Length: 361
Ligand SMILES: Cc1cc2nc3c(=O)[nH]c(=O)nc-3n(C[C@H](O)[C@H](O)[C@H](O)COP(=O)(O)O)c2cc1C
Figure 1: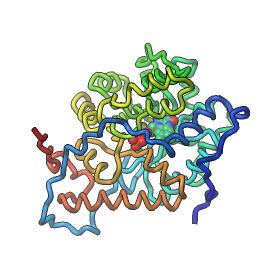
Figure 2: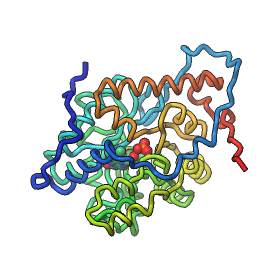
Figure 3: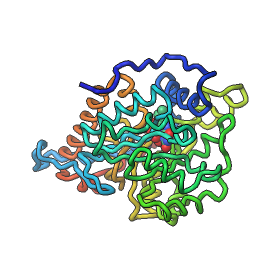
């Protein structure tokens, strides 16, 4: 039975007068993601690939090995609960449910941007999931652009120490900031600052997008910074311009955000961009992945982990048990994929087992 409180009321109206702007934004984001259709107009591109079916796989389904080692931790499967939340009471409940499920399933997890807790240390507990997940591979999270708004290596260290993280994720969200009322839009000179964090901090730095993918040029810049991994967070799933459209304060901002529903580099293409430009880079795949088959396809394209945000959020909004159930299903989907295409170990899900589907004329 879960140790986390069972009640999570998504319809609860937060009191604007008592919450800070950051807290309110976080509460809006959760509510909109749970209640509105915020999907990109693009697809991930994974639908253009299928595994070659092996009618004679010469494998025992119950003896397949989905485990892997990453950043000093052993995972039961290449599954990542993508960075989402923290900073409000509801967010704490979600984080704890996700963490409890991640601990039970031994998969990786990221918390959402910890800026709320850097600004207000009382919020730290909403991110501190080690009390329920002492062993998981856990990622801290800050917006990279904050390095242009007064944040330093010290703030990055504080985010990591706050949750006893194994690695730090810096997220890149230029388009979200650009279509948001009062967004932080100065991204000039950021590459050098990311490089300084990579050089100065003692643990791996992962840079991720939030749903618009990674180009070859960006992959090269990040590889040259010395990042430990790139999470492509490509287009095809949650669209943050759509999320911002739903919370826009006026028509101008709403129309601006709505323009970009079809923007971004699909997830499959983003993985290939990183693979081509930085062949040795550890790649996390995310953005629109819906199940273990999608994760397996990403691994065959060159990724090490497959992450999901929106789908895990919806499960955790119900209960820890629902989140565990979803992770079990995701893991089984990976196993059955491996079985039916003849891969005994996760590392055998290489590209040769994937075929590109012919485009229709
Ligand atoms: C409610 C919610 C909050 C999010 N907050 C963050 C965040 O604070 N930091 C971050 O790097 N990404 C954040 N993301 C982005 C996700 O990590 C992910 O990159 C994106 O949603 C695409 O994945 P999906 O299509 O599986 O949802 C958030 C996503 C959701 C759904």
